[in-house]
Image (cartoon, rainbow, N blue to C red; front, top):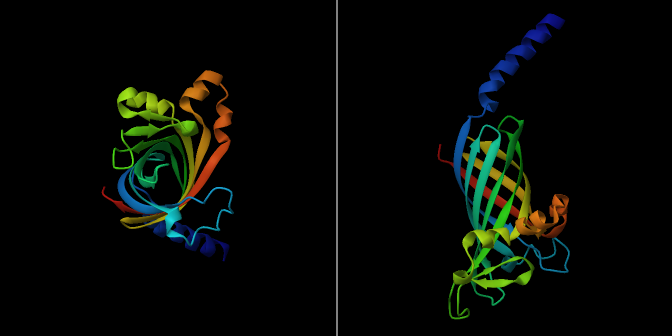
Length: 205
């Protein structure tokens, strides 16, 4: 009886491998929405207000368990005009149950760009601490170094060419420049704000 059970379990394992196996490389295009709660309010209190949701698009690449992600969000500036927030992340994509459930852990930098428009005389970068610097006055690399570090945790699942992701994105109170100056890298885990996002991914390869 024990031998029969062992044989059945072995067969089920081999039959499930094609369903749970992942390709070594994957490139995906994604679209989603990010909820950022209002300041000084409970996290879930503003979920019903569309003003607190931000549309986003992303390009996601994975090689084995290493993952990179580039996300662009349509957000608002302090002048209540249109702004773009670009976040570049690198981390790991770990299968929990094959491709049925995956866990994502990543870190990177988010740069906010406010273009010139009727409410903004000159295009600028919104850096950490509310600092605004005109685009022509600072190199892009310096803007990256002075922008907040971001940390992301997420879970998801894949169904053939489609993937679903639920993530929590933390904006740290540190920048790459401040970490390099102080040397206290652990301070990147002190959050300044956090947002919840949902995304749908379409595999391109």
